[in-house]
Image (cartoon, rainbow over all chains, first blue to last red; front, top):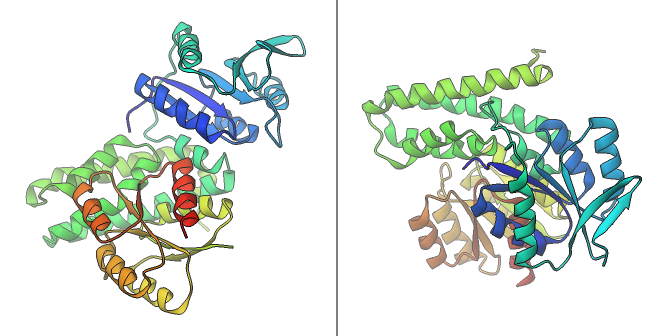
Length: 243
Length: 120
């Protein structure tokens, strides 16, 4: 997966708007993290950090845009840009003492140009993730469901570790076709944790001729898995406790 | 409630599909390999099948052949990696209804499943 330079959290139930956002922003190296409730945005900020822009549908349920903003600002000192997504005729919506610009529903390309302009005006781009993994895909998928995310981390740790062991054994026995098949099998697991190196090695093992010359790649795959695992252990020690 | 059979052997992908589709209101049954899938197809009724193509024991292609021969009314969506274009083309020639690349986009999954089921 290509790393986006900017991120937008888009909270809306309007699937057409999300599709339009992805079509417009992805080629501009902007990643759209979509949630259908404010809770998803809160989980994203907790786990990943602030986005360049947060766009909230005004009357989204159960946690409305205003409540979500209150939570983010009061509890998490959120300081990123915020827009309202609304069918209101107003150009600005006020909450307490703050005014927020409005992106109107049924927006046109010129409106998206304006949003892109807001991102471009920001001096500091989002810091690229220095960790060998990211949870943004899983957070996006589950709208920040903590149980699901932790369960997925456990599954990654157990299933990928087991598969890599099998790959090493099969490679020693020169069962190269099976090595390719297993690499193909675990590739999505690396992708779901947005680990590019693991995914790339799996892709190469899955789709090019595997023979004894691939030993280095297999070692590299093991190392990268260990690298991710170490980082996950530090971030989620409770998941790695032995019973 | 509409029932979906997921045939997939990557546990992380399975868990994600299961999570998202259950949230969308479907009843989900999982088979981690082809033989188990064939047994389930024989014993239970499904409205849709989501299947990987590279599976242990029985390949996805063999499963699709089996479904199209014995359960031609059940739509099939193939789960694939983006680098399997030839295999995907072959799957379409066999009569599959759609395909989704792994790791899937949650909104795309919902949309494609809904659209395929609405054709029933």
